[in-house]
Image (cartoon, rainbow, N blue to C red; front, side, top):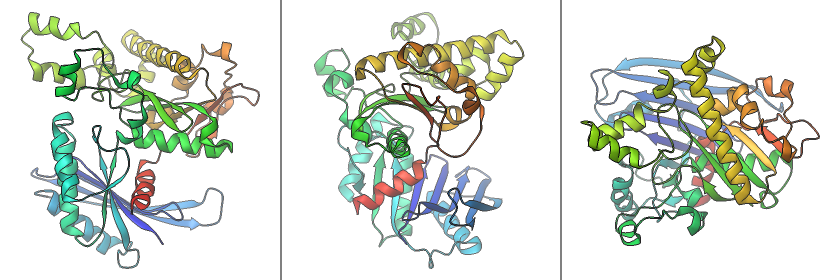
Length: 407
């Protein structure tokens, strides 16, 4: 068995998953939250294949949860190990061969999964200036994991790495070149682990090599991005210097005229922190309709709520705008894939996002689109000129795969 422990460390949380990569089976997963607060929460789930050998095997999940104070990430790792000891699976029976770490920002330095050395840690720390909310937490998780597993290889898998294939014309902003160089300002892109996984899974589902396909991957969750994948390589993506650029999201604005910030700074009492809070936490669907969850937007729209309807229309307008732009960059498209919470579950969003693309021969099968499933599936008609798919993403499995490839 090639078991890999995957770690996604947040500022006050620790998400983990133990995977048997050879069989692509998740053995256990967990989430420890409110680290450093008065009371933390601990959740641990054991996954057991009940009916093996089926195309879609039945998986039983046994969940365990409790509450306790958790001082820091070192203690969180101790709690995680105790969960494995108390509830299974035993790490003695399923010893990980490596630990894979999600790291949000690799800058322009990291373009592949990288075994973590002291120098790599220094570089991740140096990149905190580009991801002040994420890289410090990722680094805390790395250091706590290395203390817990000192004799095991640790591998960093970067959200930005898949987008290192962007051409200069795609990643360069048209600002003063010296200023951009000094402050490392360029488009980096995010959600790369998901975009890589989904584009490869789509090609495998269609039985075609990725090298033959021009793909658009829509990762639509609370954070949202679209990537143009040409021959397996990211050539354009909607997120940029930060995850704020691009599509309308749950609480993020996406694209807007940068002069708006200058205007607000001059006319209000908003400073840099206030503007950051406005654009990242009080905009997007939440800012337009007072609710940041697409499920609530859809419910409001069905009830005739005008704000929810406008929020939905703006969301779809931006999706279509990016789809058209990226089809032009690719010179055509062979596959659309929808993934993440909204992309996998909101049939209306999928249908409306491609509703204006009939001139390309895109045809949605309404019955297929309405069906709910946890498996990859085609929602276009059999004679559609473009395959439209729903591809459940699995970033933990992708991180585990890349971790094994690095060692």
